[in-house]
Length: 171
Image 1 (cartoon, rainbow, N blue to C red):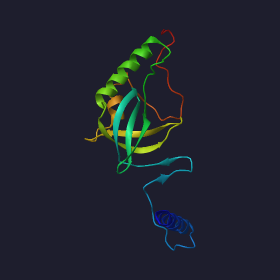
Image 2: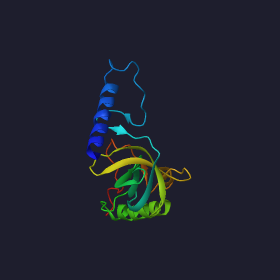
Image 3: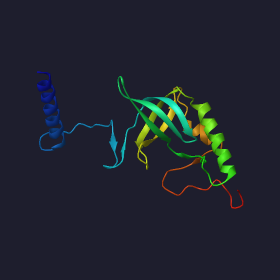
Image 4: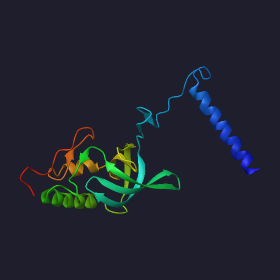
């Protein structure tokens, strides 16, 4: 009996979705702005989506437990939208040291178990992580906090090549 009811719900849901997408079946399509679709490959979830920081990976990436439904959580890597920080496996000792400092700043800004909100969430370039704006519960932008330390973070839109953190005579 249970499987019959579930099957019936699935069929009804599919019919509703089909008719909502068929312009001849519905005179006025409802505007659904929960997910703003830019293209098939790039959907943006505007948020806010609650999350809890598990740990900081580096100056612009965290691992978080994200609530996707009441009582349903997923762990994912999140790259902070709009910034670039030095890499731990950088090209010179200066970049590696700046990477440690950037990581420490992010750990102090959003420590482990810190509750945050995610906004403007979309898939990143690399599998297994998303890009999002992260804000603390008081509304502070994590990206803006990181950018306030100019030597530890730079504005970055993900499209152009990253600027080097090392100059030509750094080792």
